[in-house]
Length: 130
Image 1 (cartoon, rainbow, N blue to C red):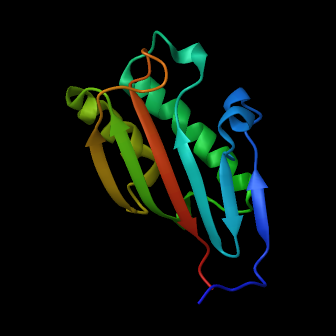
Image 2: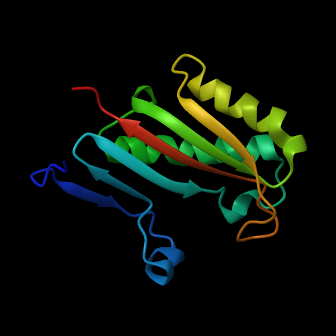
């Protein structure tokens, strides 16, 4: 049963694709937060997968703060990689943020991403405990 009294908060990144694609960087309903797949900004075009993952996780932390949450509230991540050989680099960045929290996580190799230079994308889900 859905709680129709829960307040919905759309969190914008200000990115151009939000209006083109019709999405939000994140949506919080009640104590649940869903953060869209997040990639590194164009400044990271020449960066390795570790640096891109670090940049993504900085963005994720900002979104969590905008939703009045923190990394301790993260319960799941889904990591998409273009090259499975980058898994160790991305795992290192992920572990630096989440090692003490240990959210459920999946690591999936994909054929491509929106921009050819993007190496990694991370979806994040958080729940504030009652």
